[in-house]
Image (cartoon, rainbow, N blue to C red; front, top):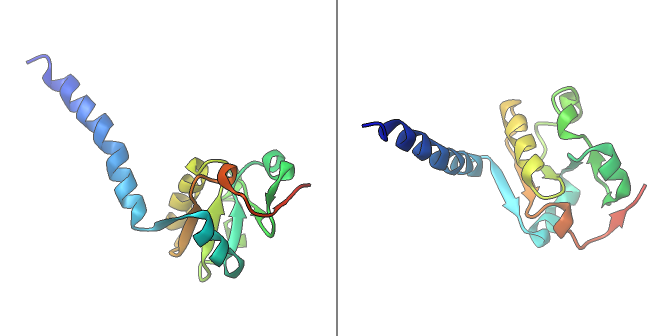
Length: 125
């Protein structure tokens, strides 16, 4: 009987990320670089990395609104326009998408693999 609690904890640990990913799919589109490139000029392109990362290089036309400042700067983001997010790898952009969803945004996409996988034009500084 002493194994029931550890088993329940293990099941929760395994299921939590799966459930979170399934919920995320309902409001966040993960786009390949080609898909991202074809639509980001018509959207709000937001780099959620920290300013020092942004300065080292970012996608041409992106605005830097770090994940750590997203709630404070939410007024800079229009809810009626598509939002294209990216970070270094995709983890922070997924977190940003969850925050934006809670704030009432509905058309949210992220770059698959993040900036590290980007092969397009980059602006530095």
